[in-house]
Image 1 (spheres, rainbow, N blue to C red):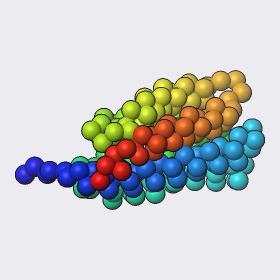
Image 2 (spheres, rainbow, N blue to C red):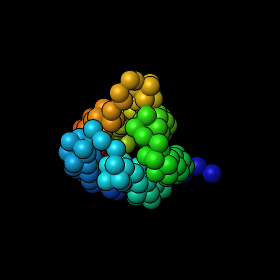
Image 3 (tube, one colour):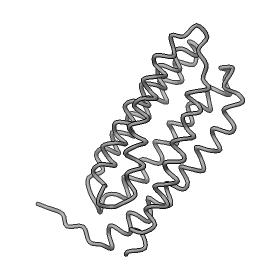
Length: 186
């Protein structure tokens, strides 16, 4: 059985995603601004902030999956929910072991979540506004690998891992702006 997507269904999904991407932009920028000056030390507060980031990703993926039912299968988004929940739990455990362990978990999450984001963006190309998501997914994979490698440094720091939220935020902003055309087409 094939599903035909009407232009209004595509526009509705694009409209929801546009709003979601603007929220994701704002959250990531605010989170980074709070976290960057604190990234030199791992304590219960910074660990909590680190766990909040993938939990926010869980909530965003759920909103995205609900909005995307009319335009395609949300299976990859549910994969992202599972991956981000595992990352949040992993960060809770890793925080007790120190910055290298946190960087390894954060890096693994960035790699897998980036691959999922890239795949979702590719499947949504016809919607428009997805090239920033595809590029962001690819960058996330590379950044995640660098966090894993950086965990072995003599004095590993969270700064680069935290700073990774800023380019992601910019890509969400660009995608939100680009989705405006599709959202208005309905």
